[in-house]
Amino acid sequence: MVTWKGALLAVVCASELSSDPVVDAPQSASQKPAPTKKDVEPVGAHTQKKQRAVSVHVGKVSWKTLDMPDPEECTVKSKEGDDIYVSWTVYLDGVVQGKQTQTFYLGKAPVKGLDEGLQDMCLDEEREVKIPPNIHRFENVGMTEQVDPNMPLVFEIKLLDVNGVVRQQYNKRSRAAREARKKAEVEEAKRQKREQMDREYQAWLDHRERERQGQ
Image 1 (cartoon, helix red, strand yellow):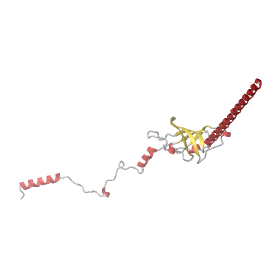
Image 2 (tube, helix red, strand yellow):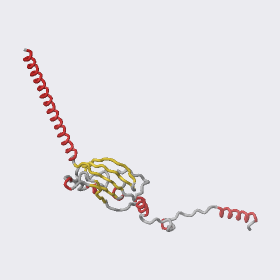
Image 3 (cartoon, one colour):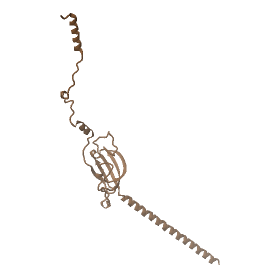
Image 4 (tube, helix red, strand yellow):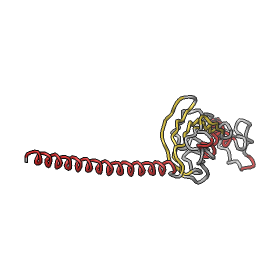
């Protein structure tokens, strides 16, 4: 026979068992819930985001002549491998970014794409070279992250020398000028010496004449 005390104890035990937290058994990989569309990232999405962050307008290097000497004066032209000396002004969105002179071997210009615009160029010729961003890639041009990645660079360039030709001509002219000055100085010294001798001779003649008259 179940007493009222036994029945009460059974009820208390049942309530305690039902209040314990239920711990689920670990799920296997096959039992895990399938991911939703929101959780799934498309393949290559991260790469695409990176590409969008650095994507630039694709184009080619273009150039045009601003000024050049007469054909008969264009006796020297630039070619691959030449040691060239140039002066340039660089523009970004029409604003001057800097001016400088540079010497480098054609084919190894400090800015990518610049070589293409400097081929077959006459001494003293001036060109405008436009380099799209997919070519120059903002390397060695002092760009910052705030610059529009689709911004092309525009150079106004003048070719000052090729393989030292102008410097050689200058040195040759300087040497010729020095030799001419030296020759002129020698001739002037000779002239002054002749004049001095003439004055001395005339003074001797005058002295002889006074002596003759004094007798």
